[in-house]
Image 1 (tube, rainbow, N blue to C red):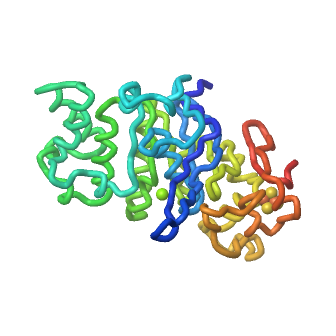
Image 2: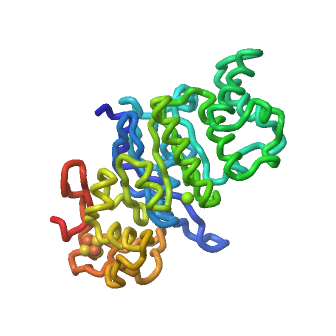
Length: 323
Ligand code: SF4
Ligand code: MG
């Protein structure tokens, strides 16, 4: 397996001013020392509750947010340190699909111009060739060439997401960061978009980071899954290992809350209810960040931050119970 992206000790802190006059500056530790790899041609799912840092991780990987610290190695080169000019080729290789396709599309441009803009920025084609690429892309995502002259508001949510995907594909990318691409869509449309993304991956040899909070959909599309909690990666492994044999208490709780097709088959006692709210990322708990909600928390958990421990082939989790 060839590593396409290697993230080492990535941090993204946001500065927040508390209070108006002379208020002290605080940091929201949105992503706090996260490391993982993504292999060529695979889909890595990234899951966790809202505010866990999964979207921030995705955005920092393509420098939509400047990383506070850490390495982002793409094909062996650290793009965290690159100048905007040096980044240009990577802005073509790495594309992003957003949660709200409507907000990410310029509503005053036609669909053809939206896709064409990406083609123009990277000098990919002009004239007839450019138009042919636009028409081919629309067909590839299940729309038609005639849609090129229409505006985003004339489309449904699912169709707009298809336009967003066509725009991302316009520059012939290698790697696509999908930031909750189906969360805003009707359930009936979600599977269609996920299946289309899977088909495109096979046809075009794409690599995906698939960010989502819907755990059942993530399993369907991902080869491996990472679980985040309060800015930390707490578990990572193949989808089968993480879903069938979760090792971290947080992963276990998240998975126990997934509704199963026949609710009669799970006993009520299997469901782990997480008490309390997610603590503030401005002032996270010492030691293990999950300890304020963990049913197994021990004294050690407040004092020492658990490190990632190997629990199986390619399967890692960060919890003192495991070491
Ligand atoms: Fe729970 Fe402690 Fe493990 Fe954290 S390290 S998940 S608090 S048992
Ligand atoms: Mg998000």
